[in-house]
Image (cartoon, rainbow over all chains, first blue to last red; front, side, top):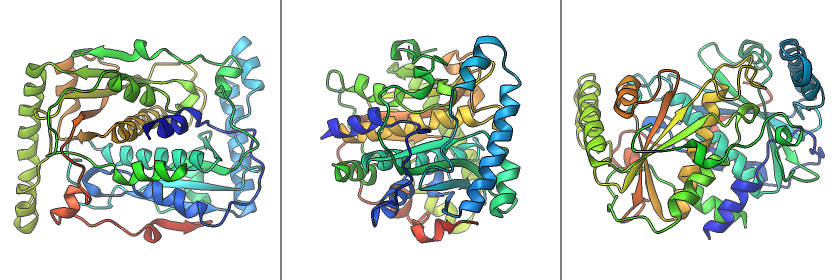
Length: 206
Length: 206
């Protein structure tokens, strides 16, 4: 049985160019969000929220901002890196079926969140665990997910009317795809290679 | 096939009291770490490392520190919360088979990490995605995982000889368990209840 989980974990991709825009089958979005919501969280604080965005005007505004930020990053590159980056697609905001913004509420479960007194970021970590559950569930449902991170949090907060205390953590494009690539986009385009696991392993001490 | 993933996602628990200390079957630790290492990461930076800790002296030192931090948190509680917390076990450091510390290297893949120029924490988020892959893989292998967060990062950095630029993100206890609880510990002990998904959902705007 564990083999099926590994298959999903290794097939999962960060999708940019393969979204078809087709509608989701009935009930699938709820299953994927229920999986996200079943993530572990520090002190059982469940500090996440999910904003499901279908509105094309909202997505178009975000897309415009993302492409301004693309230029900000591009302007820091020269030579080969600039050439490689020019070929890399960074989002599928307009082509995907919908987007999901995942947020963090530091006051949820407070003031005394069990397990967070020494590590303020522990609540933020919980939100990311929910994102990965969502991503794997979507992959198992034959959907693609693409995490877009070329944006300023303040822009996104204003765009969606997110309260000041809430932090947007992820903009995820979601939907049916023509295929999942075998090799991650950034590796295929020669931006970076995958690192062998052995290079990341330490025994007993660093 | 997706049903098996959901089963793992919903069976997964944050384990404290059910570790047996039995050895892992051959090859299982590598499968679980390979799953973690297959997580998505901003700019394909793969900014994580894994320190596998079997040394009992290291674990005993950490356990002592965690219980000092338990007292720090307990001293902030009064009344019913203090009584509930007194009954809650916060770690299985000594009873579990081994521990894995997961860290974050902000310089990995730098200086220009694709997708991180506007969101400095995006690399930290990647590390958490690896943790959730590890957690689900361990659950599928019938192992328990318990994330311990009652510690100061500086203490852990010194204990393991972690370089200054590297940030410890998680201490995970891992190993065979007598069972996984049906209900999360903190809910069973009346610390907090699970929130309905509907309360976390927003459409198009917050």
